[in-house]
Image (cartoon, rainbow, N blue to C red; front, top):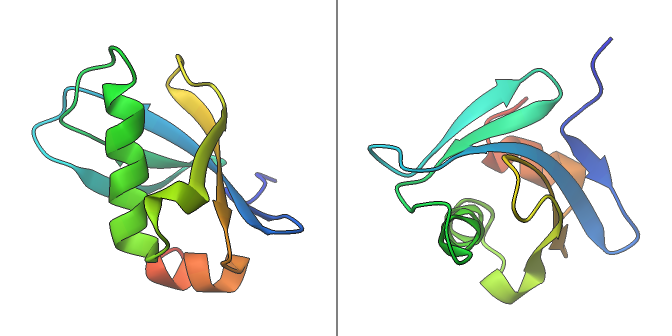
Length: 98
């Protein structure tokens, strides 16, 4: 049984995501296995794709981008992203994962 891509933490949540850089548009696609598939137009160089993912999640979840950090996988497609001051239920509803 796959685990949820949204895990609670003491300060908010951790998202497990798979990032597709160089896409035709920025989009949160939805669940893919135990991760959330996110497409961004930015290239995977010099942190541009990571910044695009942070900005896309900030627009979708409504925290300031400073509350969103890449915890692991900064140079890999599979990433763990921390988002402070949000519950798993709020994130699931805002990302249409319910």
